[in-house]
Length: 285
Image 1: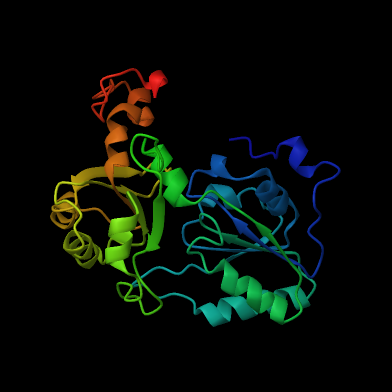
Image 2: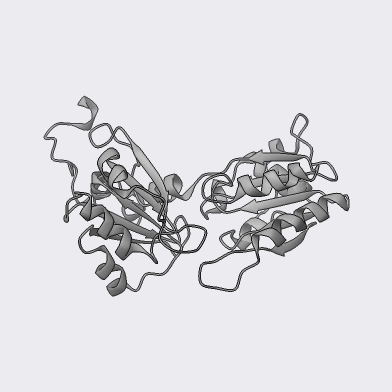
């Protein structure tokens, strides 16, 4: 594979990663093609890349000149402490390094980017934030699920499946979320899906409401499970799915029956051209 950078990403007028700076950058949900040009520009300049568990090796190949330091955090597995990661960024910047902190998805969407950036600024280290495509949007798009659709929802809520302790979030008002948002996207929720699905059912969501579980989204290993709120826990176990996963609850999941573009690329026809049962062409919506 030709790993040369597009010329625009290294041309005049693009931001320069100066010594002593830290750029916090989103690497997207997995597919290297979903990087932004600012991310490519950062990779080309960095002296050090500190990267998360979900950053693909192919992305690191775009920074052959840099030291690559793993700082992944995975639930239930030995991981670096957040304090140590943040302070290491400070130390590297103070040593005059051009530091790229590369995080899966978007650094400010359940990525602890806010905490790391605040630590850096409190220690007098200048930062630049480079957004990335979040798995809750990009990962579902690769599964053929639009998080918004005019015939389905006028709201979407993104929630985390665990809190700082690693347990199911106790601070979330699941009743309010269930009542107030037609589509719910859950990050890192597989471990606690029993409690989460029970809370949503208790709040009045339908037992047959469509649910999709997308694992290792946007990569060659992506898997998509279509299920319902009442059976999602059992179906995940039966399918043998493992994190990382993004979970979508709501009628938007039905749109996969017509929008599974990856399946269609592989030769499968659309399963249902009108999955919402509107009885009219899409262009008349």
